[in-house]
Length: 44
Length: 327
Image (cartoon, rainbow over all chains, first blue to last red; front, side, top):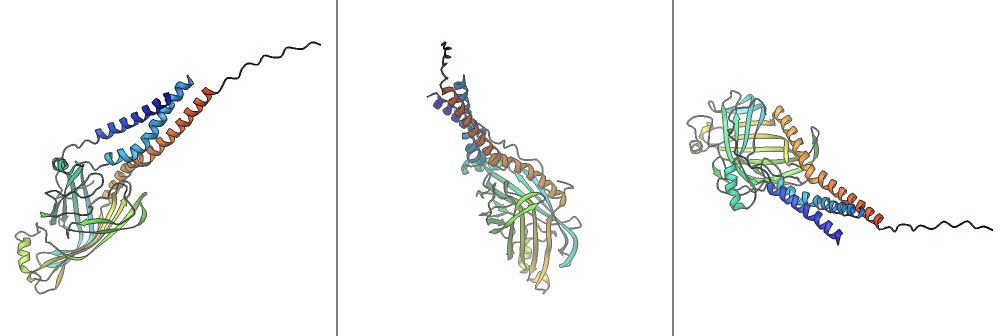
């Protein structure tokens, strides 16, 4: 019984961690203020 | 004490064993995405190219034609489309600006490309266009999906506004990066004149009235890093002709542009470095961490079982030493 509780705890923690990470996701940020270029940049 | 330790080890074993597939098949598709606010530029050059001189309407050899390509993510537009699309979407506003050797504009073609942030599949929404013309892409453009496969893909050609197969033609190594090589040939096809022409007063409508048409063919080559789906290098053997009409003064056709377009060296180096860094992140999520966690899970489980077995082993009973027998 205690082994089952231990295994379930591990499983729940794994799901919780992955769900938390994916829920945080990426920050979308803001649209860049830089323009679409009509001159040749000197470097990347 | 051993029983307690083995239970903790068992919990950790299950934790890591479960984390392995969750990371690969649940977290990776949700985390590996093109950022909605991405901004990137690229410079391509065609050395010793042929370019139309609009003053004399003749083709001339020029030292270099430069193409500046910018892609800029519109965050507000992507958030608006996501509400109805139900998935993460990226809206790229792009501009292909072509410049002659004298620094003057040859053509500029804007476009809006809307796609799924992870799968790269095109998403259709109002505003999708090339040079102001509404289009409905059915293939990828600029980038391949994460975990690119060894197969042909449908690739959108902005000049002709058509989607055609781009063929997988083998695995290669480009500057130390394993890549898939793709090639697409767009056969001669009539294409619209750019809305912005290099000569003031000339518009696509005025050219259309002369009966002259614009034709184009290209061989497009991409060296794609398969984990990120990012091209590390690209080339085009590009030809454009004006055909027929009164604009050519009786000539059947004249070359408008012909050149072998290649990425500028500093941009190749920059792209390769960037892709190498991103490749490592994808490898971590799809291979290193899942396999590492799975192995760790198995080892912890074995350790837990071993400790459990030891704790259950009966302690040997103390056997009294035989007393010495005296005769």
